[in-house]
Length: 100
Image (cartoon, rainbow, N blue to C red; front, top):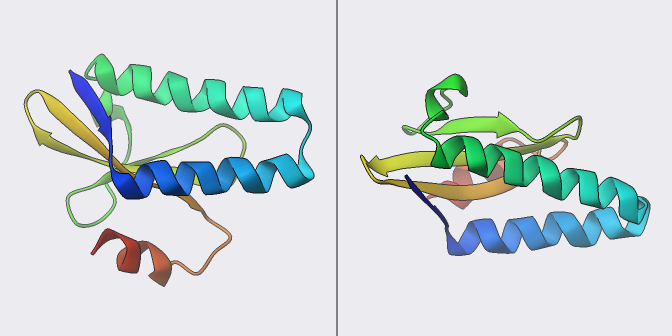
């Protein structure tokens, strides 16, 4: 299955990395990125159902031990779109605003 990052997902992932670079070591950032790749690999191997349903026909995956959640949606039988990466310490209303 193909996995595609939306424009917002690319932007929010870069925002998360920039934030982590200010407070974490390079090793911790590498672990974070490996966790992101592991979840994407799960999605490519059609293991998306193991992640809980959220809202608006989306599912989400917690990335590692971090407070970052990745939201995604199955568009059709061949495509999953990653919608955004969200730091769960933010206002939850912001998720809905970003997904509109």
